[in-house]
Image (cartoon, rainbow, N blue to C red; front, side, top):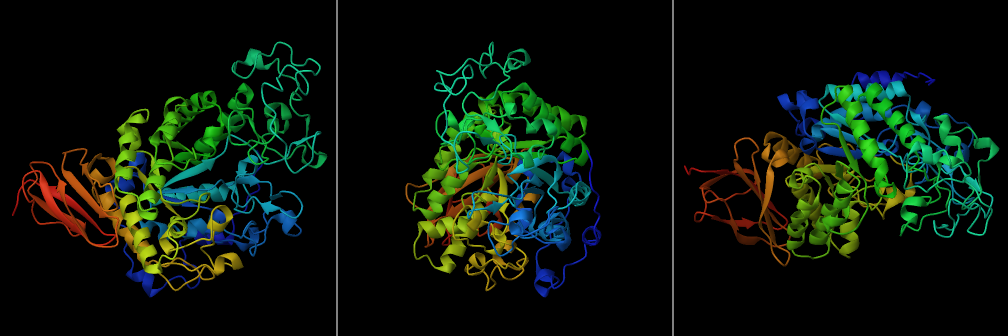
Length: 622
């Protein structure tokens, strides 16, 4: 491939870790600093459960190189996609900005950076009057290079190397389900197309069961063998697809430009068969049952592993791809990463849902054989107990479902847990929606408690960028994607943040923010005590109403017991919590632990409103 090199002055500054103007403050000097342990220095040896992940949209984090704000395009906002005043367009953040803020992320305790896709996107798409840009990264045209708005492949490699030098891993967000919206259908218009089913529009007839015969000998998508798919030569079984002349060769690699490699059945309704065979909000849905598509995607992403040495993939829209694809793709990526000398390469799929029932997402680790999935069940349970007034039993029941994952509780340890994200919205926003009239102080307290729990309980905790600066959005999707660097988006700048007097019109990298400090504190505790990252978890106390939740974690090497106790109510709560019968005393790691047990097998805890106690158990009392 041809890469246009652009090693910019901004990147040179980034690699020198120079501070951005106005960013070195007394607050930063007073912030907690994450120490580097031997395990962190040997980042390749860390298991997925040991990572503390930071999920960021590069376009909204830091603008390190204003010269690339319009990417590889010229013209106005509809040609370049750049309009920092509009929430649905590019704002200027880039790879150089991410690299220059690694100090900030290291201080937060982050060990793995997951960023939204950086591949070249179609700059703008959508019907006239309702256009938006590909700033988020999910409208890919070229899978082989970064989007020009973010930088070059050399700059990406430099970012990965700079992260690795600090003991941080890098997780790429990848897409195999679809590409940008390029393919059109002769039938209909550009506002969308009704889904046409497999039964009404079989592969064997043009345009429906009464149409002329096509694709003789093709036996359907269930047989992904090459011999079968050589019989699929005409893609006009449901709609008649075509590519406008101006975009006929826009996709890279070149094979992606052929409509035969897409389902071409119209827009998904997110129900039934359309969930796998329909266009995701108009995006061109790849025919992932096709052996050429499978081989092509394997080549694309093996190349990224080999040449940039990334440490894992978050897999977008995983539930919309056929299971057979994952059963080929995952082993291929594991082989590729092993050959590249990258042990513990982690892959986790996005299986979106809004329920604390683990069973739905667990099926994708069994039937589809994905190594892990984003823990939407955890997110939903946390919202139930901290925003919707449900008892702490909801969280206990969710953890009971850990046995459903392929590999059981060991796999559950590797699931990235999270509270909010770029699609559903920020945790602070969700809590505010659930609790009309909540005060700023209580909202901050509930958000702090949520992060304290996430960083202590099983799973790989994932902080959504801006959460550590008290961001509170107006909703989901575009309304939850504010700028960390000074924003000129009016819809963001009128937001009232928590824990700070700042707005998004300011630069929000305050290392003295109470949420930043809390996350840094709990990250340090988690990294210092393997029980909290690799240890088996056992729920020890829960209630049918809001109140106390407690879980034990056990050191994976020597079995030492730890106990984490949380109070989900606005008043102090007390409970006798079950402990191991050999427990005698406690060392406090966070909050306030009792000095000794009340009796063998039981300890009395009093936890303040929205508070916690994280303790290491001792078998002897002083």
